[in-house]
Amino acid sequence: MEDLIQKLPEVYQDIIVGGQLVAKGKRDCKTRCDSILPLVKPHDVILDMGSAEGYFTKKIAMAYPDSLVVSFECNPPVAEVQRESLERDGVYNVVLCQHRLTLDDLRRWARAVECIDVVLALSILHHFPPEDVMEVCDILCSVASTVVTEVPGPHEHEACGGGAKTVAYDHTIGFTPLCDVESHLGDYIRSVRFSRGGVARIGLDAYMNVPHEGGRKFRVRQDGVGWLIGSDDWCRCAIQGVNLWNLLHFNIIWPPKKWFRHHVTAAYMGLVDKSDVRLWNCLVTSSGIRAIDYMYPYDYDDQAAYHVGDINRLEEEINARIT
Image 1: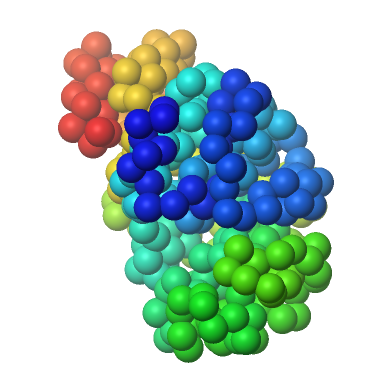
Image 2: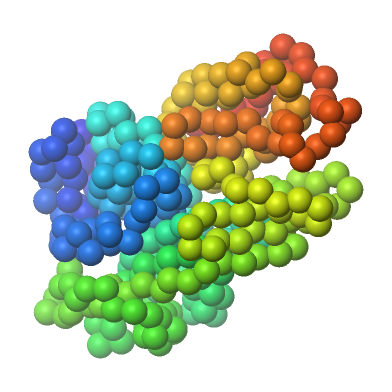
């Protein structure tokens, strides 16, 4: 870990391993995290954008072991520090993707069925192009019931982003204040804010980039208690998790591929009636991977034939798609 930290251009967030502070970051992480944690509920799915060394990702995952955190960090050395930290503490309810989410990524993901409870967009919105910031923010608020933001003020001249900084600040000024924190760039105070509301989306694809048979579209709704997913002729409670096929578009580096191989095999071997043995019918949850769409609402005659080779093919695809 020490060698990995030495390769960082700077230590941005506190790095904690085994309950011990390994390296002190430039940011006041604890104040922010103490305010954010009460917004998270058991079983939530959390998206942490620009997660850096993973302080918030790891704190949430360990505080809520029955939650699932999807963490995005694009900088390879920083992502590697986060991956090592998660491995050393055995945190497996986190999926870490070494990838920079773009507006196009978010558009594609938002057109698919996903149930995200909390998005952390801390000091990240102003890193998008100025012309993309408003749509990025609006997409996040449309797919998640809670969105937490932190944006440098226009007077923070040391902060990057230029026009994006102003757009992000103006677009989130109406969010509810959560806490005031010191900027790591100088004698400035930033406001951490959040937006919270119900989610109702229609006309969704089942998963990214694969047309659903018959052109069926889906809808999801968050009613303050849980998520409902449905189509024209049915509706049911959604399982808390994220579609594995969707995540495989974003360069997963944690958990390791052997974890995915094991859990995908276990998910399908545990089913009596096997159907649609494909990566897009695997859901990553806090406790592993679950096979979905194997019984209700489909007729028994719609159940696909199952062969051992189906599992072998899934394992081969995982080997090819995960680092």
